[in-house]
Length: 209
Image (cartoon, rainbow, N blue to C red):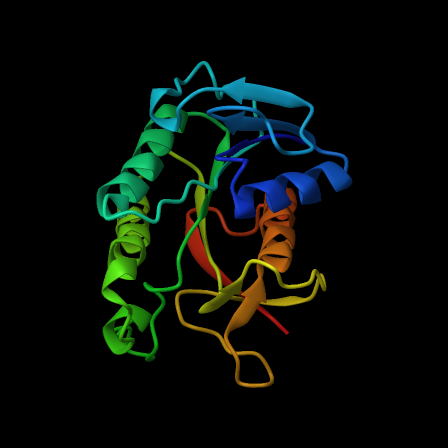
């Protein structure tokens, strides 16, 4: 498969590139500077300047863009909206590295992780930005998207086990009652979804067992 990973130099992006390359994918890293991944092909461009032509011909584009500044509230959903627009009407799928804050914590889907968690003030733009990105995707009709929420405890340095549980819009716990996943196992889940295409125009969530 031929895929592109946007913001490939980030922690999640690097591991998604690595996982895909290990499976024999043809991977292009889309970065603003030097390519620090194992991808052999590179597009050096700002995400917001990417055009339809830049990302044409890929089976899937992964949006691994992240931002930890107050501007995340606007930039994270704007990044997703831009890529969805440029991929509209094409067969190229858009997979978005999402957040856990918008996962529901009750069967009635009236309360989310964000509603019941006392996040530090500095994290709110990130959490809300990811939630707003999902809201944008839910209104998209002509782009094949999949939004992938990690578990609540998203661990950058965690091990790759290759074992995880797939959920939907609700927060899923493992057999130990935990909501945790490593970036490495999250990358496995993203590449699995690229291969399978089982959740088109859906949000899924993943948690390590």
